[in-house]
Image (cartoon, rainbow, N blue to C red; front, side, top):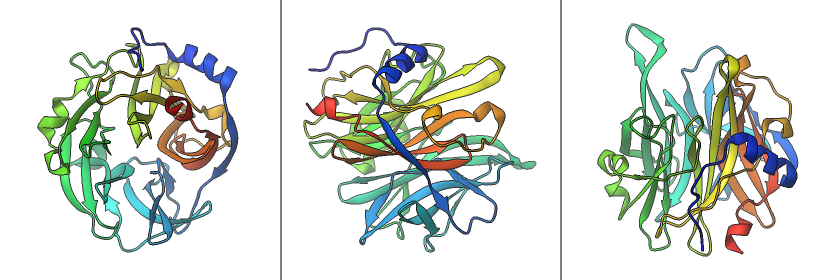
Length: 314
């Protein structure tokens, strides 16, 4: 039985727990070919299709945040662009899932300033669906200025929606949850109607959901991130996990599952992003799992960790 956490714990306490119990075994940098000087980071988890693994990644130059999402065929740690599909311009931070036999793909759609195409004027999350990555078609979009919206098929076949509102009681960014019957019911109104999950993050910190797994007991294993900003406007992002009961809305406390100092050294897009790990999600493989992360907004790595969901299935 899960219990609702009455008070969120700050990152420094979660990091103390992490250091006592961490299980990080090895890390490998993902290599992306034919990118012509562009960085690829904030990747999705790999998707198996037609006997091969495919991964989506955010691609942009080091000096810009105007990006596109590219699909790659993944062989080990080496990733080769797939064409078709063509890249998705002005899209960031891709994610992949399977719901009712279909591939669901999405990312954050940028809106640029007409007077300055290098200036971001707005954004929203967009969703695509298809039988393969080659026939993806748009089917839904989230509210303006909302990232980290994720979909998951629940045990009864309905669709769970995790959201990430900000402001108006949600502070710097909290997590919401709702459910709908079908993908066709994923609408802006449904997303805005999600109930905020209390006490995941302190008021000075924020977070969101990146990847969701339906566990064998019907609970949801959530991979997300928790973040805060220190003096000098330096950002600190940590991959995190918790279990969630979609029937009762009960959940376990958030736990950090990896930190920047435990992966390979790598460049940062800017000095204030040096301590950033942004998770795409995990691939479970028995006692261990492969965690896919964007590192310092410049590279991507695959990090082998202990499976963070085993305790929730015990």
